[in-house]
Length: 584
Picture 1: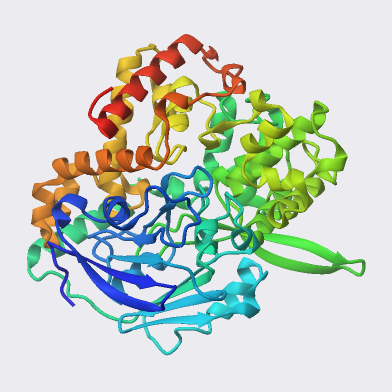
Picture 2: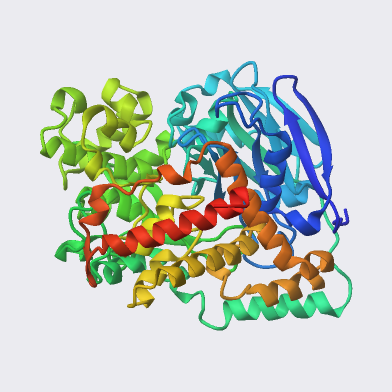
């Protein structure tokens, strides 16, 4: 199959009827792919005035034009109406899914409707089937994965299995979608969006083929990019210790959240540092399909299950964010205990970050006497793993009214029980960077409420002067630069390789000169469209509030300057409204 530079090829599956069709979405030079294509599809097929659980709402998985052409173009964007916020949202994941979709012959999958029974969707280049899997109800992510591998075996090529756990089936607001065991569509409730459709899993078989460009230009560009990634040392950090390398530096900067952000430094950080994980628990590094880096770090968890020295051995992936959320944020200072919590989180199909930060709020609420053991059932105490292990299960099962509230997010629970001032929520439960004012604003307002849409944390670290205008200009430009990568569906680790000019050259060499020539205009169009959709689906720019806990943070620079933070927030809100509405 030859890639069409003018159209994106989308497989639309309507689960209510079981029918599927191929859509050809025009103006590829404007939507590019990935984030842009997902936004265009929601603009056309989404239902703006209906909630997230309405069967008509589309669940979208989109790749980019360079997927399969170059290294690290290995991500997929999942676009959906968020059960957490009610707004248009997206989450990104690696694994094998991107290449599976490419070799199946599509630029995106769009799923609407609701299956009559719990089902799995099985897709290949020449096939699309909906299989009943009622026997998988209640099964954890790993057991589900083993069953799903039975499907699609007749097809050759890359095969990817994505699935949800019990949390997604129940509609937990921060349930995630597991991708090929070690990657995730993690934040804002994609797992619940999938569960709303009675969809337990999706298997994509990349059993087709596509043509690579002829001539010397593409071969030279491929070689140049590959050498830049593998021979310059740019990726050494990500392969060696990986993102957990950040723990000690952020702790030294007094920017690592501990104990529900009651402090930003703890001398015991060495016990959960990237170095300790590597020395004590690292089993292997693996890579997403089409990536030569190998940044996925797999730890070996050894658990005794009987008195006579009987042990289970489990492979658990870890990164900086999971270690923050279910390590330092919970006061856990044992690397093995962090892995145990992450393993349970994986099985249940929960977003590790929201689940960890929510339990951190619950632990502090317990300390302050706002909630009692009658609500928590078990002791939730900072530094004690076993209570949190049970708390994760109770969130997924909705064990009682307290955990049902907590499953909607820690702020939802705080509004019922009290403790809003120390709920660490910036749109959703915080990401692991307590770097200061700009990061807090960027997260509170941002599209994904994390460190991924803009480098606000980097601005805090690299700028000593308090210039709100400069900060907002940085956030908007950095966001647009990331949109280029996220519409190509490249890994953000490679943004130092794939700058705008290199992207243009790579696109031209791959046969997408029309996109290359229009890259700046497309970036502005996609940025504006995403904000328009977010606001049309319920985001109220003027209602954003940063909880009190974030004003109490002390970093290497001292206390938070609330006046400066308010100024940054006001200017950023104005810029968002200008993009979304064309006026303030």
